[in-house]
Image (cartoon, rainbow, N blue to C red; front, side, top):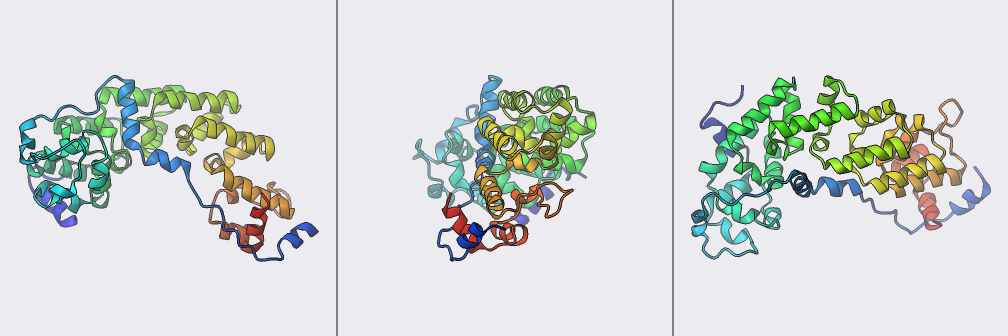
Length: 356
């Protein structure tokens, strides 16, 4: 892959310069396995294509225009609506180059209209300069395959427009490494023209009273949030401020420290806060100090907090003895939590889980 990228960059425009009960329960070896981990947020991050569709529907623009030259598909006369790229890889230098770059063709063929679009492209004519542009902007070689898998539509964008969109970020005093991270972490950022991006950045700056440096920090830390569905962002903002009761300055603090809070399901956010605040009696100040708790799976928090309570070790006040850091409810593996925080063993922990 690196050799292909080097050959691309060399051609064309120059590269951009306790109690008794716990003891009794923990005496036997448990056979019940721990609950498998499943991060609901990951489902959002694995579905960038769907998010971009939402953005474009919201602003009434089409996500996929017709292929510029339909006759270019004649080299694949047997192409049907249901595609299997494997049938074409051996006779398509373009597909072979994409595979070498790490593009996962099996994911592209599942998207309506994408297979026809890709098959109509010529690598040297339609792709090489775009790939070189991405490399010049700072997308790492090892990330190009993932980028193109998520957003093959980048090849339908005019290179001059892409250059303008990067220049816009430079004019807003984004550093080269910040631009590289934005483009890499949000493959759809460059699909939006400068006016739309400017409106998005302005929305976050005005809504959360951000300084220019804070807008740049937010965009760099979580670039997907800037192009995220604004209706969902507004909904979570209302939840954090009005329903959860955080003050405006605290909302800003949460946004800058954990912007992903604005990308999770509103219902999940509400339920998690209720458990942490109402059941565990954590204050707003404690949640601001450990915002990761708002992004941690409910089951993990309940199991770990319940286990500590079962052992008589619930002590989250740093001013008192036997203090347990709240972040331990969110960090590390179960094995690390049980041994290092609860000072117990997995047999005891698994046996406790069996009682839930």
